[in-house]
Length: 516
Image (cartoon, rainbow, N blue to C red; front, top):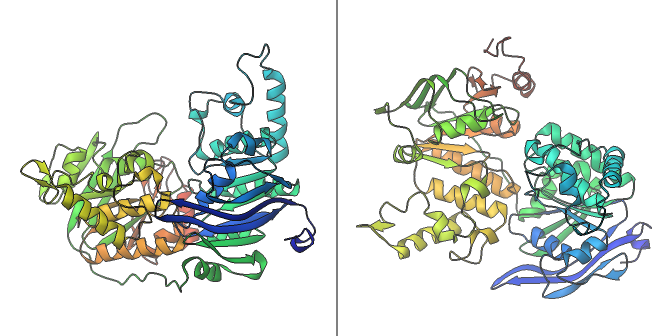
């Protein structure tokens, strides 16, 4: 493809015939495209379509089996991240790679100079970081400890790291997966400013609305192949969704139904403070059989404390917590499992899976001591592997097989394995904490349909999500959480998104934080 073919702008990156296999899995199949100066390309595809593998090849983490990469007209040596960095390629990973105990400045400078240099030149480095932060709208204090920063601020540090290394091509892998809507808005303002200054961006995301807003061109991968390319201005979200999954996608339907008895009741519950995280304050909540309770709120308002309480990681310091037919239990993760509570955790890497365990081992993490996995104290690994295979097939987990290490999977495929582990156990109560974070639209629809099916089968579902559209679409009753306090329950359709947004901003609560 010539410069004239790409609108006259300089071609800064060219991939040709990129192919990569992992055993029998063909992750990338002869993929090629160009990127121009000052352009944002969105890379779309289902979980496991090959997006992250392709970017890891570009950045030098993986070596392609076939194909070439050219940066600014020069061939890029395969398998050398330093060569990619030296050529002006920067990458911000979905899961940040920062040292929490170091300052912002120290994190940015790591790896950029010799530790044995006579002068580390912190003054000049600080001035350059401050200048980059001002030019690109990345407000963050260079002396702040990274561990004290919000998720959005940490992402600014990751972008500053790349810009400090003179990145002219920036790869963003699911950059908004853990951001609040406000942080996403700030990020997009930064990206638009950077593009105007000549930066070229490859934007990997499953959020079609964001793709429509930020990109100028969209490339679609499916099963490792490049199956479509379209200018963003000439398409829409519906068409992109069809290109991703190769079929029409129907939104899930939630039929009205009468809920059953209460399976878990909280009355005036409070929890202890843990660091700077909000604690629960006087929470009243009822989870009933055959009902989805949605919890809306801006990130960091006590969602984690409520999830920890229901999952058995926290106990109330005040108030009462009653389980149907089992009052006053000694609350712990073991007793939560025994009570039929299954959890889809917020962080699939830290609390949902064990990275170096196989898919089989991760599939039975919460059921290994029960039949059919365990017989008279002995593990039945044949039954365990059969269980894992059933999850892989039913939930479309794209992987080499049940014996593969789960760390080799994309985040979305990890999430599907966790979902299968939860739902195949036929739980009484499902704690679904950000259940579709990082999933493609087809997988999102699948997860939503499975949660609705579990509700229709009599399970009580607590859906915790920062996506207000998801909460309003699925929930029978919606609560809003703000600074550790819970609003009254709003039945489906009784509050508009704007009205819920006011509650999320605290305007429905009294001066002391109580529901008005």
